[in-house]
Image 1 (cartoon, rainbow, N blue to C red):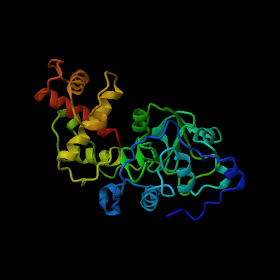
Image 2 (image 1 turned 45 degrees about the vertical axis):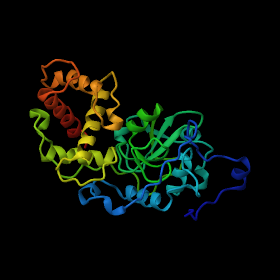
Image 3 (image 1 turned 180 degrees about the vertical axis):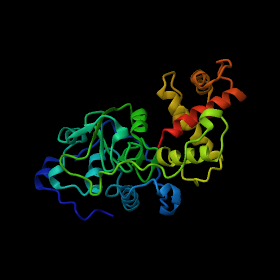
Image 4 (image 1 turned 60 degrees about the vertical axis):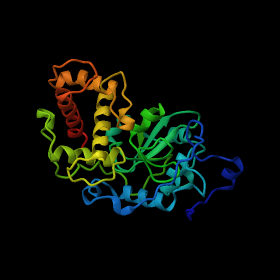
Length: 308
């Protein structure tokens, strides 16, 4: 369904402007458009989502493609259409819109709901809209997504997109070349009443630990299962990805488990190395055992305790 408020000026049309296309070359392999079920979000997860998130979800469900084609390379167009921004804010590329916007901070964790996050990549740059605040759920048009809601439309975190694309993060603004998303400006949700998990101290996983993993997984890694504190294959995969992200934040070599949730020798070596600061005293040989698993849980718990 094409938006009704597409009031393109003759000057823009004749100039053939891309209206804020994104950096890099379009990827040739199209992704399958997933079925979007609005009921898949549990009550506890919904508490973490802002009204802007709900609007973005509905927009993607109604517009999984851009006028029948891919959204890939049309990040600024998505911002302009979804945000119902004024015609005066239209720009030929995301990077030009960035230069016409007021950057508030380069600390993505401080971003408010409705903020625009900006990257320097390729010739055109990249931009996304923060749905929940804090840089964790950013609505964007790209194939570098943690959760796809259509053809190159969906969400990723600031760190997730930066890592997947290699783009340089430029900061966030509340305006897109002077236009703002209605209802924006709220701080990130707190995550409800979940207490911190004691797994950080004792390495023993429990219900709170897994609820936090599932909550962060829903927000950052596309987890769609229940937030019930009961582990299973999908929760375990998210747990590895969260742990790997924390390991990667602490140096190298980098483990690809952050993207695929599959632990390997580099992952386990990093767990053992970082685990030294969590009380691990075993060998650093990349071979997991009871003490390595305990360190892994402590590292993951440290990460989820500070995730919200």
